[in-house]
Image (cartoon, rainbow, N blue to C red; front, top):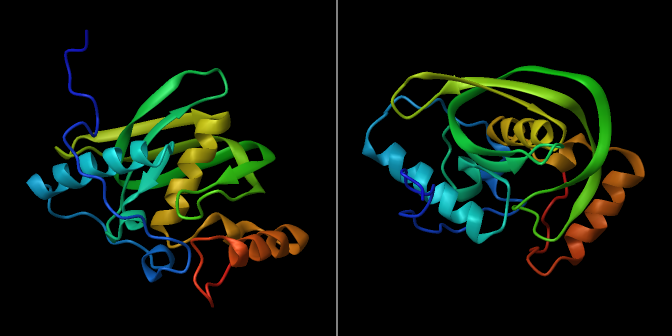
Length: 185
């Protein structure tokens, strides 16, 4: 039996920002207020991520322009990594560059081969302001880099080129959630 609450168990599911929403393409601001609203946001982010069956979620994906992301993501050794980071900074992304399938809760049902490093280190703080350093390899490293990109106003299509970008753009235009004129970026 757990002696700590399950992340998101007290949170509310928030509406998801979809590709084309300006919140996804605007760099987020640093968190300066570490009050109760931050705790509510983190709980809501976990609840929203779990409802959407994701492995990571950045605050701007729920329309909040603050530097916060939550994750519940396995690495390539199937070790589960669960947590959140406030004011994260990607301090290292290195190792082998691997092109692998990457999806995003803001582009539901779509994915594309995206190049990421197989090791990433992110530093930031927790809700109480204490420092945290998270290191990931494999799939978890991909997740950490993906979420840091979101907070910088990027989505994974921004990393695509050539036929991969064109193919994803066509898929975005055909997606049932897409609005006319939504750029695939």
